[in-house]
Image (cartoon, rainbow, N blue to C red; front, top):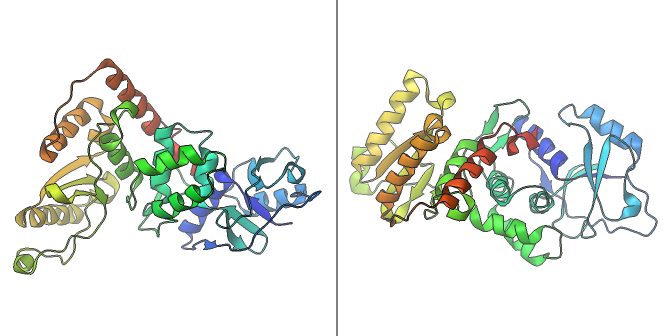
Length: 326
């Protein structure tokens, strides 16, 4: 019997595959449940838990009917009668599959607040993957999917439990973010005020900027890939992590890159973990970004302040969505 991993165990497997430079492939078989079908056996659960040391117990599996539920302590079964329809399952090995990223997002919709679900949508379509070790991240990873693909699937399968909330999260997210803290920075700046963000316009993430031919002699690079970019305002916001920007050589490269961008007409603003982690410092930073974007200032209400504190607790807590991946 084939084992199809559900949301949490799927994330753990995708994380492990990113660390080993492997990529999941689209699984195009259908797995329609049959009356009286026998589910995953206890020995299959034991096999995958023992073989995949990166899995945490219990193993979460997806099944198409109550009769396929696995009734062992080391396993939790998630029933979805749409399972097996095109686009719901990704193949990994002859006897192992995962739910697709869109199905994964829909399954988490019943467990996560909308802001965290949006964070997960950004991560699924981002250029990074959470790794199995705490505080570790696989960067420059090929995105698992795109928001467009997930949106199209969920629009076509709105009967799936959690699809409506997952679509709301997709509408709030952006593709191609490069790290967890880039994602948090984006969410703090751009989520609606009622969700705790500053309600700023959406940027694009890690999209190439090519200097014009007459500017090429002014810069050292042919293409720049800014973290967050508002093209109509020529504004760039970069996130400098201590891990990737702390060596003298890297610091020198970052300064040169920043000067190059400013020399060809872009305004560059820098955030780091200290700014993102401090409510007071981030408030000042967000207000500067707002002014650069020409967005009208709006009065601060008690509800806005409470929502921001709640969002900070959600996204910066030790048990953030990163914990779902390891």
